[in-house]
Length: 98
Image (tube, rainbow, N blue to C red; front, side):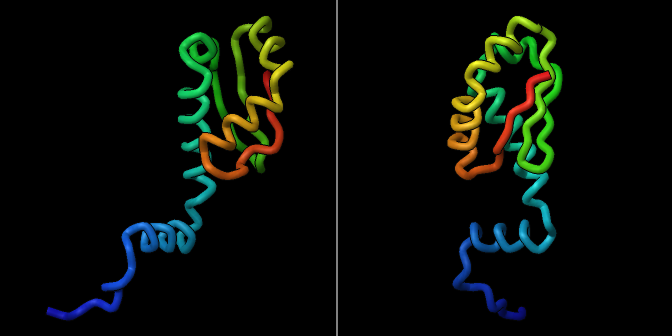
């Protein structure tokens, strides 16, 4: 059986290398943003959330309630900060509520 040269690498390092070499980070960021939105906003907001889309550091959230959209628009900066903190890095710079 052949020996491998990666005896000293951790699984975390191997996965990071795999993600970067296959350019998967943007897709993982999209999934992480959706999960963070669902977790942080709770059932009240999630019931009115139709679509969540991340494009070029801008998060587009489509809501079915105009009243909720107006209420959330007052706290955009706080929502962005909370989502970025939950993800662990700055993925979102702007938030667009539709």
